Length: 110
Image 1: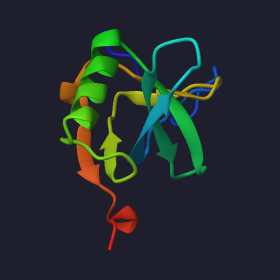
Image 2: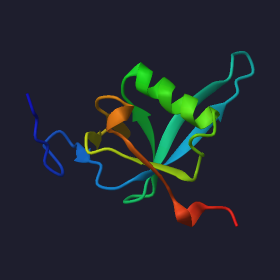
Image 3: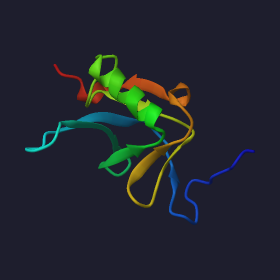
Image 4: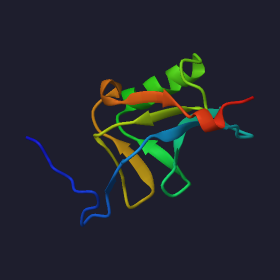
C-alpha cells in the first residue's frame, strides 16, 4: 500500500522538501533526570521543529549525535518519507535507513 501525499494536504501536512539541520536539545530539571531530544531547523520557515517517529528511530538519532557521528547545528537530514504536521512536528515514517544525512556548510565553525 503506497500513500501519495501532495506537497500540502487537507490535514495540514507538508512534505519535507529539503534537508533540515539537526539540533540536540538537552534539558536539565531540578528534581528529575536530564533529558535529550533531537529537533531540527526547517530552513523553509526557520522554525525549530520537534522530530517524531518510532522510539527506535529517536534512540538511533540520539546515539548518532552522542557518538559524534552527527553534529548538532551542523549535520542535516532529509527523507522523502518525512512530513511536517500541523502541530509543529517533523514525522519520520519508517526507519533511519530511509534518511539521508549530510552537513550544513554554512554552519561550520571557522
